[in-house]
Length: 607
Image (tube, rainbow, N blue to C red):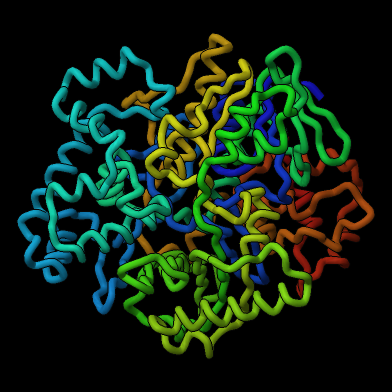
């Protein structure tokens, strides 16, 4: 199969790049190992509950600040509903609950009782960082990575606030601790900022580049934090929708095992099932280690380059605990994101970020329950375990994490309806993130910014995006890398890139919580709403019994219909060439079968 562009990896960065290129009319294909797209920003179902696989608090949707997601969806002209959290999140720092308000002054008032001797320094620090952020990020919006910045545009931006830009650039090779030391002296406050940087980019203030942390400390307050209405299924599903509506192809359950090269270019990819795909250009959205240690033939690279890739320092391996609990286990004061700190002096396994999206989104689980996802570091060695010891360690890890959660919600362990754990091995198996390092290489001094994988590579037609690239981890940053990769491809083809234009129509609709089931698909016609609600009952099984012995991907069709991707669903259905769908319902694993025939009949009626 020949394509204009092949995107390897269906995570957020790859989908962002592919959707923009499809929008420009290129023949695009996305190849991904998983059953459904999304990667760490994907979702899965268990009965009537939707769980986010990883990313569950998203930035970059606001009207101000570094709003890469808003820019992307406005460029794509794709409507999406996003829930805006009233509070960004909170941190349990020792015995103190620190609430992160959107208003920076209100947030400072929250910090003053914790650090009374640093009150004036806190005000000075946040005032300086907010001014810098406004001059560099807000007043001159640019949705690209530093290695792809247009020099003329950068000089023009710098001309307006030269002092702020010079100061910002001076932070490039300084640590966040060096920056903080100019303002603060209380050792405890450095521990507090350690927890912020470890949450944002998995590093301490001594490791974090000041050029990144100076932005991070302010950006969330200016831009806000968000959750896709209906779960992250709708974020990645909407990107898939744009790809398929513009003629693009999603190739799921297909792992790329190697690249083929010829005289300094990548000619295509080899899949695990023996298929070969070719394209003029390739965008790779995976890890730097898999690129140089697995996909590229050794003879096509240099030993120096392979050694550089191998020495990129990974973030710590993670575990993710997924729970469905009785509603009464979670107190009324709980917010959608809470960070539990085990040891304020150092990172340990009791440092867990807890996402409870059902606090603000009432559609993702039964009304009398809550969805809980807890993610944190795992310092155990999971790799050598056989099946039985592995299962035993998983049980031990589940119990450990529930014990950590019980310090905040004492009765949670007594109210568990469903529990499962993703270990570092699970994370690697589903997302190909080496060793379960969910954030890729550490964005630490010596391993940061321009010392990481760039958008453009030594191969003229190979481009990269994702967490291994210059801007590192986080949903707005990987989305930005996808935008930059798409624009690099467009420029090489002499096509118009996507740049900021304040005249663009807004397609992101911000919704105040709570988002309730009566709001699901409320703007659809009664018939279409009925069809989408029927499709939404599908469990998106990885091994569905309903379509065994056929070429029909029922879970893929139902998932597409749920997010409004009717054109993609109809294409998926037509490729199977079936005449009747009624028999499929009898094999549905739900007690009350999904109305497969009704949904398919509706799709067939579409012109």
